[in-house]
Structure formats: C-alpha cells, structure tokens
Length: 241
Image (cartoon, rainbow, N blue to C red; front, side, top):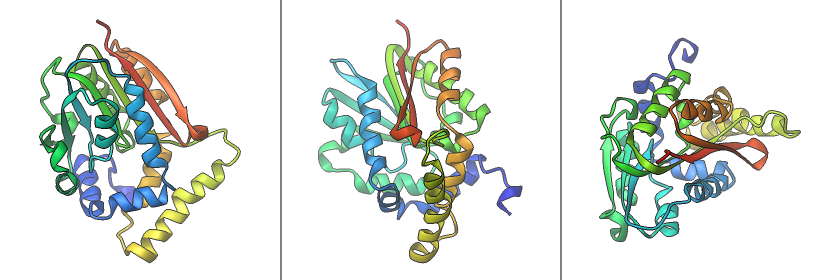
C-alpha cells in the first residue's frame, strides 16, 4: 500500500512521472484550469534576469513547459541545462523541442540531489512544480545545491502548487485536488492513481516558506511570494556578490 512506501524515494518519484509522462502536459493544464501556465510565466518573471549572455539550470525540468516563457522573456539566455530524474519526462521534453530552441537546451537525466553540477556554473536556476516531490531533508540538500551552482549575483526562482491555508475556499481547492483529479484519472485516463498523487504531494508540501528559510540559511537573499490566495507559492532571490 502507498502508506507503506516512501513516496519521496527517488525511484518511486521517477516511476510515477514515467507513467504520467505521455499525458502529463494535457492533464496538468486542463485540470489546473490553465493556472499552471500562468504560474510558470510568473516564475520566469520572478527571475528578473539582467542583460548579457546567460546560462542556467532548469531543475526537475519535467517536460520543459517553462522554456518558452524563459526564452521569450529573456532572449539573451544562451543555454538552459535541464535536469530531471524521469526518462519518460525527459523523452517527452525532447519531442517537444522546436528546432529554433533545440540548440539552447541540453539535458542531464539524473536525480538532481545526486548530480555533480559544477560550482558557480550558472547565472540562474529555475524550477516549476518540482518542490513538492521532496521532503524537508531533500529540500535542505536542494537549497545547498542552488547556492553551490549559482555564480555571485546569480538569480533563482521556484514555484509550486501549495495548500492555501486560511483561504475561505480552501475546501473547494482540496476537493479539486483530492476528489476531482482522481475521478478524472479513473474515468478518462484509466491511470494507476499516479496523477492523484499530485494532491497528496501538494498538501504534504504546504507552501514554499520552509524552503525559503533553508535558502536563507545557505546565505542566499530570498523573497517568498504567494499566488492566487496561496494556491501556489514561490521563492526568488539571488546569491550575494
């Protein structure tokens, strides 16, 4: 049973997203009522990148939906290195690449927390909807990695679906996550309750405030933000020069 499994084990997470990969884009966009695309755009905006030739990482890159937002907003980005543990998501991302942007994107298929990314190797780090699949200890390692790979003055931005505690309509949001999404999966996708895990990960995650604290403890300058009454939360900031 799921309760007996460590849902944060990298192999478990990889297998979930491998199985979800073919339908992930359509499912996440439709069942979030389009908010995932809005939040990805807002995450790109939070980077507030400067001029000059830039290169950076997209961590837990999934199928690469944030790339169009990044490259449209910051045409001076020269390269994006996408890191993801799921071969299925990796393959799906490859199939989505347009010829005009393929030369700007490279891939590392790896558990980001076990990867050996070089120190001070990036001008920016971005990640959309990957935080929820980590527990507190993994978040601490991720915060250290962000500090490790950023150049002095480098920028970062993360965004994640969150539990909007205190919002009057929180019950409706949780009903959507925990009841509507599994029902859609069961009736239309005939899945193995993989997409329904998104609701469990999101409510377990809470919000990005704890991750913001971990980033600060690594010496980074951090701003915490909430979106749409707390249904998503994010962090952004920079590494001091």
